[in-house]
Length: 423
Image (cartoon, one colour):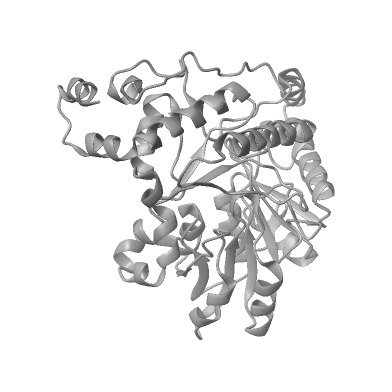
C-alpha cells in the first residue's frame, strides 16, 4: 500500500462548543481528503520510470502504454482498451467516433465534464432525472425525453454502482440510439457478474489522480467493437495510420509512458486497495448506524465493487442541520468532506443560461444535490479516524437546531466568542 501513515485524531470532543468552527482545536492535525491518490509501491513505480528514461521512449504508444492497455482489457474481459490522456478527451473522441449529433440524453447528477464533452462539440445534452434510491439515471423516464433529434444515451455508473444496463440497452435498440457509459467511477466493478466495460457501444474510464486506479492523469475507452477501436486509435493520434499517412481527422489524446507506468503500479496493487476501501466502508457502516437523518449509500455483496466512495444523504428534517452547515463543521476539523455533484450540471454554466427551465423537470436531482455528502476514505484513513469523523457528526446533529441558528448568523470577528458563550 506504499509508505503513507494513517491520519489519526488528536482529540475527542464531547461538547458542541469545543468544535473547531467555534474556535476549538481541529480534531485532525492534517487534512483528510476525499479521493486522496493511492501511490502503490513506490519502488516499482520508480523502476518503471527509470526504464522509460533509459529507453528514451516517452510517448507515442510505447511499451508501458501497450502493457497497460493489455492488462486493463484482460482484467475487464473486453476486446479493446484505448488509453487516453484523460477521460474527458476520451469521451469527446468517442462521441465524435460514433457520429453523435443533435441531442444526447445524460443525467445532470454527474461531474460536469460528462455534459461538457457533448456541449463542446455542439451537441445538446438533454438532462434526465435520477432514481432517488440509486442516484443513477432513471431509465423509466428516458423515453419521454427522446425526440427526432436524439442520437444517443450517455449514462453514468455513479459511485461505481452500475446503471440498469438491460433497460437502457432495450431503449437504445428500440429507438436506434447509440448507448455509451461514463464509467469514471466504476473501474473493476461488475453488473450481474460481468465486468463494467462490456456494455453499450463503449465505456469510458477515468484514471485521474483521485480515482480508484490512477495514472496521474488519464482515461480510456473500452469496447468489444474492433472497428470502433481502430477508429478511436486513429483519432487519438491525429488520424495517423502510419508515420507518413494521415487518413482521417484526429487530435492528440494519447497517454504518455510515465502515466502508464503509474497505472500499471496501480493495477499491481488493485486488490490491496479494494481491501482497504472495503475496510473503510464497513467501518463507516458501523460507526454511522443510528445517527438521525444520515443515510449511507450501500454496496451489494453480490457484485464486484471498488468501494471508492463513502456517500451519505443528509436529511435536514431529521438532522435539524443542513448538509452545508455539517460540511462547514467538518472542514473546520480538517475533515474535507465534499458535496458531490453540487449544484448539478443543469445549474452550472453554460447550461443554467441555455436551459433555465431544466430544474423543473429534475426534482430528484434537485433534492440529491442538496443532500449528498462524501467522506474521506482510503489508505490514509484509519479506523480511529472514521470513528472520530462519525462522532463529530453525532455531536453536531445532537445540537443541530442550535448550531444551525449560530452558523446562520452574519459572520464578524466576534462571532466565535459569541457562539461559545451562547453554547
